[in-house]
Image 1 (cartoon, rainbow over the protein chains, first blue to last red):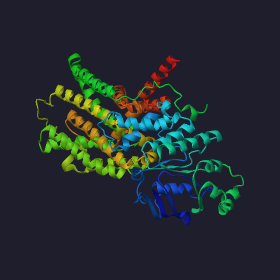
Image 2 (cartoon, rainbow over the protein chains, first blue to last red):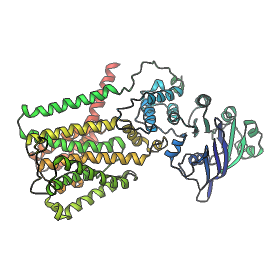
Image 3 (cartoon, rainbow over the protein chains, first blue to last red):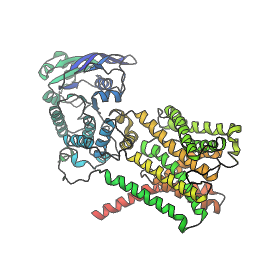
Amino acid sequence: MLEIRALSKSFGGVKATDNVSLDFADGSLTAVIGPNGAGKSTFFNLITGALRPDAGQILLNGVDMAGKTPPEIVRHGIGRAFQVASIFPSLTVEETMLAAVGADQRRASVMHHRFPLAETRDRAEHAMELLGLAGKRNRTAATLSHGDQKLLDIALALVLDPKVLLLDEPTAGMGTEERWRMIDKVRELWEKQKITVVFIEHDMDIVFKIAPQIVVLCYGRILATGTPDAIRSNEAVIEAYLGSDDHAGAVA
Amino acid sequence: MTELQAGQGAQPLEVPRIDARPQRYRDLLIALAAFSVLALLPMVFGSKQLLDFVIRCAAYGLFATSLNLLVGYTGLISFGHGMFFGLGAYGFGLMMQKTGVPIPVAFVATLAITFVVAVVIGAICVRLKEIYFAFVTLAFQMLIHSTILSWQSLTGGDQGLRGGIPRPPFLGIDLSNHLHLYITSCALLVIGLLLMRQIAQSPFGYTLRMIRDNATRASFIGIDVWRAKLVIFVLAALFAATGGIIMALFVSGAYPEFAYWTISGEGIFINMLGGVTTFLGPMVGTVLLLILNDTVTRLTEYHGIVLGIVILFFAIGLRKGLMDFVVEWFAQRRGEGRG
């Protein structure tokens, strides 16, 4: 259970996150939407420790993450993928996975030669299979297509067996068809892994189709939360977001 | 079919895997073979000059390879790595001159001192980003150099440690004997390289590569970036100090130049010559630089100009080190051969 309590962050007087309180139940799938500058990425950066909150709590199963460093938060079980695929360009897909698991095992032992442990290999293999990267294991990350780099970024988060997975715009920079494939993948991961997934998405069609739960942010505040139907008929949302952007499926 | 689809198991299953065991033994075998060749060398060529050359290669090779652990593997460009070379030479020389302990004790004690100094300096430096890291390491180098110069009563100032370093025999090894010194230097070199290879190939070595490629991402998969950087900074310092100890034994003294920033510069230069993408690149660079140095200084007094031109050739002409070039060339040829 991930509970956000009265989380706030300002940048020189601008409230990027303003008294946000939210609950994410274990195994839930939630989309975070909102116009540009609504504070979606800031929200993720606060949860993952990239930014330090001014106030509020981030409780993961009762343990407060606020003020902890990114590595500590990752080790507590909150993994993330980035809007712009954040990978290790010179490592191959397989090396990336093995190295990530090796570091996670806290046995980045200098005694081992490469990655001899069966457990390391199994975990790496599993993550590559899940994201369909196993056939490209020997490709250097820099040579992968944009879509595969995004998948590798997600694989990096998943291979650590997180309890909560935060995906910052998994479909950013993709064409329409590729978007749908990516979002199907996200849904598939969520169903298979039974973890809590929170993702930021701009495409309304996608959000309404796959997310059982939606959070709408606007100027750092929560405008509305609820099921797709509830959000679609929420007047505040229509006015602030859908209305201003008259085509609902617009790519922001 | 798009890339996303193609990823889903479209390729055949027969993909080579990174397998650990055979390579570990391979490294060990190569090391043993290299040591055997070096050890047999004196029987074939009696030339003292050649053996001297190899001893210097051992000292500089350990130093340059350890620098590559920082530069090539972790992306930490240290301009002050030479301070640990100087620290090793002075620490060992002073200990032998002042205390008269057995050589192995002085060796371990010197590494212990280096460890402490490296932890302190590293803890300050590794938090800094690129250019700041480079300059603060350089500043510490100059600090150590000027300490050596000004602390005349202990270090002999700009004259260096004179009067020779006593080299009492231990365990049947007599380092005042040239052949014994040669074999010991070769052994230290091979063991040092093997240990560094082990570090580079271990999971920790891959942690370093991740930090080099993308430190932010590394911290978001749970890696304490600054701690990993500190660990490799200290480890690299220990190998550099070992190089300095070999140098002190070789010249039977220690001189302020061993701790001057130009030593760090030479380390960087060697890495540029040999290349930082292969483990043995710096070793190749060391041999190249020493050969260049020796031949050029014999031919002309303007050796600085010649070395400068060689650097320009590698930096602008090849745009990489020799070993990088060779490896790429082979990879290309293999690629052409296939299809």
